[in-house]
Length: 118
Length: 460
Image 1 (spheres, helix red, strand yellow):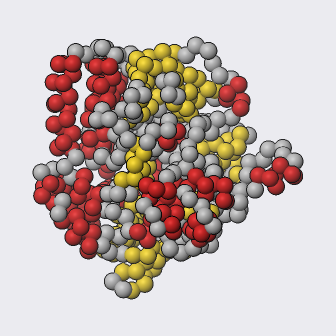
Image 2: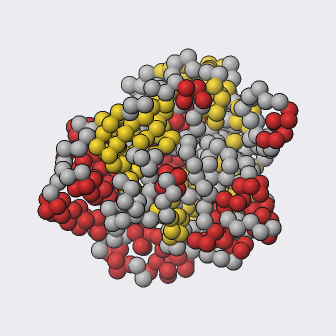
Image 3: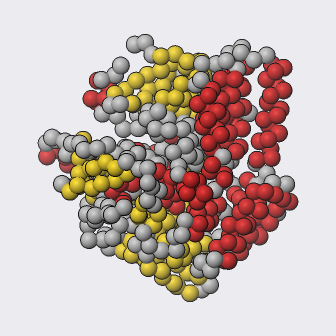
């Protein structure tokens, strides 16, 4: 399968071709990406060189999936407008809209509340 | 609110959970099995029913053996609640879970927690960089998406899964740039006394030896006895450095797969306030249970790796034993019938456990790779708390992991301490000069999975 890259870095993973796989189209950071049905969002993004998936709330450090099984929470992304989705536990669905998550997910907090949370 | 009711509710669809369901159904219990994934199998048999013939040949017969288990489970008549994230297990035997965007509840007369294991954290410099993942994580990528490294891969650490993945990659045609093996000579010496016991589990031992020999035969660069692993990179992994035979070496790679064994997933047992002990041979917390896996007369049982690492086959046996105990407790099996069946399962379990002491001794992760001496190493990935900061907390009087939260939010991020708990336990114990058992662990509270207010409001 041809993989269009969404960053300058080559993808770390490539999928073995499967004749019987149906394809779904997602939008990641406003770019369409085509992936086999049935895989996780995290796998889909890794096949398209999407790292980093997010930056951390504390130090704005870049992060990408570490565990792929729902325990590390490094793969948090925004899916269909909802922040903090675990990409490794979410199966891909045609038309899904995915965005990177920068820092803390945005909630309408006052400056005072923001500071208190740090 | 009324909740669906079952004799037995099981959390987790790996070998322990599936076997518990099959056994319980055989005794006529009504069974619900909840699991986060869409298909049964857990992590070890993940995607086994949908796997292509090619994937099955790469992953090997131990993986394909899972198909028999998933088929038996499907035929058992247990209700499979797939795509369910359990966020609370109550001592009232009620389970709350998320599925399809809302929270649901079910009531059981007994519960088996079969939540398995996770890869042990590998806190070394650079382990938070994109491009660094667990070897188990990479294996999941293959099981879930037939995804293989796009270039030569570097595997580093120790333990059966590391060698297994290396062999699977060779089988799939992936080039291995290096296998950086942290098993040292004295690990072999320490393990040697367990050899006679392990020889009784000869097939397992032979399988492991073949995997390691195969790497040499295929001329994979293996750096044995490597120490002081550290990953370099700016916003992405670029290389891994280590000391090999006294020399500092570096291997360039944008993909570095780390592994140093697996540890029990204890989130629910901690949340239930079960007593845990620090296991010195497996270097992790394990819940205290009776011989059937029950937490102190609660009706809640733990089976499989969540009760201490035992491997897939022994996990399946423990699942059956827990289900048997529940069948007896609910009066569905006569004590005699139960005892007869239990004897058969226990004989199998003893065989399956023979190699475990050898594995625990041989693949005991190095102190320096569990308790970072470099102050700058991030320990709590979520809140970016370093080893140096945790040592500082201890110097200021912090007694254990739970207090470390108030000192600097350590363990309070979205992973709820899963990726730092063991490290922080050992760090504080070392800093205070007391045994790990004395410093305790984080106080884990539900929700165990993130729940939105919207999902709670939608509860039905």
